[in-house]
Image (tube, rainbow, N blue to C red):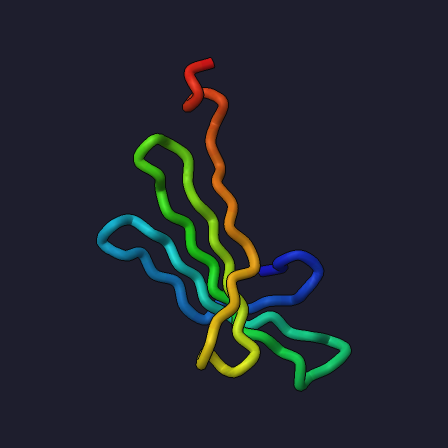
Length: 81
């Protein structure tokens, strides 16, 4: 999987009871092998349609996470157009 321009592997994917899909993996820094980061991406269906996409990164092997992305996607059909 390629995320942006960083080569990335996904080590874990799961779907919870509420329907949230989560992926965790590693983004590899090709210029600095000590600069690899863990990534966590989640996709959650919204009751009004569409979904929420959140991304997190950890530089300390998962001890702490920093949110890097929080987007909401909706179809224009969900808007009643």
